[in-house]
Amino acid sequence: MVDVEYVSTGVKGLDELLGGGIPKGNVVAIIGAFGTGKSTLAMQFIWEGLKNDEKCIFISLEEDEKSLIESAAMFGWDFKKYMESRKLVLVRLEPSDAKTSVSRVRSDLPVYIKNFGASRVVLDSVSLLSMMFSSDIERRMALFTLCNIIKSTSATAIFTAEASEDKPTMSRDGITEYVVDGVIVLQQLRMLERGESQLCLQVMKMRKTPHSRRIKPYSITSQGIVVHIDAEIF
Ligand SMILES: Nc1ncnc2c1ncn2[C@@H]1O[C@H](COP(=O)(O)OP(=O)(O)O)[C@@H](O)[C@H]1O
Ligand SMILES: [Mg+2]
Image 1 (tube, rainbow, N blue to C red):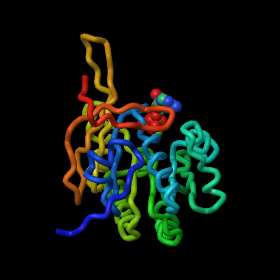
Image 2: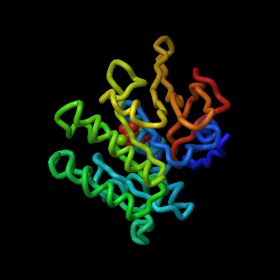
Image 3: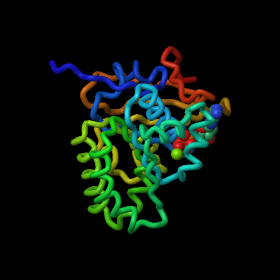
Image 4: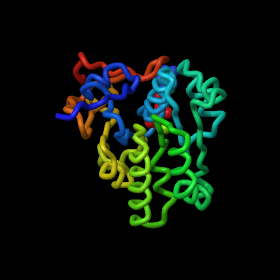
């Protein structure tokens, strides 16, 4: 039995469901519809690293630097301070400029992740990155290569992914869940008779740890995401 080193997600309740945290070096997809808190969870994971004096990289295709700093600040996470001390690097990829972004993902980013020595990497979102490639083969190759590069650095990573419209536990590109080591699904479940809905989280896959598969309710609070592991859904 090999001893697994766990990386805390910074999310109360989630580390327990994972059996201690994310196994170090895993690349994990957070799959969910818009508004389920994927970006929040990714920022929280980065904040946890920064608090522990770890180097972090946040690659964003969704928000520019200013907007990302503001979003984090809403939860009390001071990203700016850590950018100034070179512990945090924000990499903005422009979805409208696919050509430049794709070449950066292929050539600059691998070198960058290696040289900077980040222990945590976020890609928000892998769905927007996927859309930049013109064929499934290219997409699959790019995601696979990106995962392998991150794995060769032993950084632990979170990729956020939009859920497929008809299958809420699958990613929209249908590739991400197969190339990553772990999948955490965020869903808004509806109880039609009562007209209520609830946010629920489930760890669907996580290599190297005996995780729970229970579906647990969670909240997005002013301090970030909290998973209610002692509560049941509805
Ligand atoms: N301070 C806050 N307190 C409570 N809920 C919040 C707060 N800030 C954002 N939210 C909730 O989080 C949602 C956005 O989460 P986000 O991480 O951007 O989702 P996603 O990336 O999955 O689209 C908002 O729609 C809102 O419901
Ligand atoms: Mg988002």
